[in-house]
Image (spheres, rainbow, N blue to C red):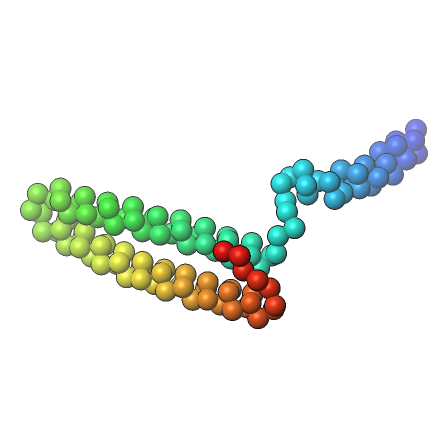
Length: 117
């Protein structure tokens, strides 16, 4: 009995996995044959965009806190400090974005590829 279970389940699974995990799965999942360098650059663009969105939210919240502080010097001081740090962070983020895109474009073009965007 154990031999039948072994042959039925354990020896038939690799054949099933090959059919299930073949080349058709990538097409079914929506994967493309895109260049991995471009995919990494796209992921970095999205992450930096989300970080910029987060900085914008912090900047707006700090401005709102400053406007609604009703003369409380401690709240105004905290809001100004947060705005200053957000502006510094945005400058760092934008320079990191520019450097990253320059490096990716240089590496991509040095390998003989063409960029269509």
